[in-house]
Amino acid sequence: MKTVQELNEIARNVRIDALKGIHAAGAGHPGGSFSVTDILVSLYFNVMNVDPEHPDMPDRDRLVLSKGHAAPALYATLAHRGYFDPSELLTLRKLGSRLQGHPSMELCPGVEMSTGSLGQGFSAAVGMAIADKLDGKDRRTFVVTGDGELQEGIVWEAALSAAKHGLSNLTAVVDWNNLQIDGRVDDVKKVDPIDAKFEAFGWETFVCDGHDMQELLDTYEKAFRIKDKPVCIVAKTTKGKGVSFMEDKAGWHGKAPDDEQLAQALIELGGDR
Image (cartoon, rainbow, N blue to C red; front, top):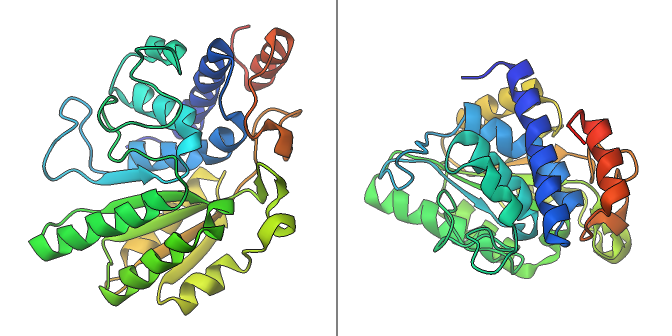
């Protein structure tokens, strides 16, 4: 188990390495990667039962990154957790790399589901949790989704199924950064109130600060006390968190920094230029 200070330091390094990979690739999604980083780090380092040396361990917990375009954050988190060497992050999106633009379960160790088509990862995670319940397996499935992704109807069909089957082994975390590729989420298609919607679909819900490690950990503990239904954690975040010129800017949804921008971002993140 890591201390909150240690988790924050890991998250800082995850952002640095994810951005270096995006810069090297000349493409990628820094905004949503940075908003989801603290969520991923808190789960992989302090919550989930995983073993990087045995990524296919039968009783492991599983995480599905339904917002698959945030793959740089997932890859960097997996690398720092020990699934592969962080130097491989510089191969992001390169021909022949295991680290493609969206996660591939066939290529990258630690990736539980190939995602990218929004909404499908959420429904796959529900299917995993149903299978575990039917098989009597005592493990958890986590699915991380974006608020813009909630505009997909497949999410709500899956949410209904999760409630019907009483999937207390399923925890959804919504990266609520209020932005998507076309601008403010509410301007494209309003999804708020997210917590009330999931409650109406039969889920238990909690709202927390998605950049406060202690609050995240405390909220997971609350979630695990729920024994009769799935849980949705709505984590309030900032797109581009940690880099001033990226924060809360829709334009950084899917754009790589140039050399000057990378240097400035690394200064702000406290990394080497």
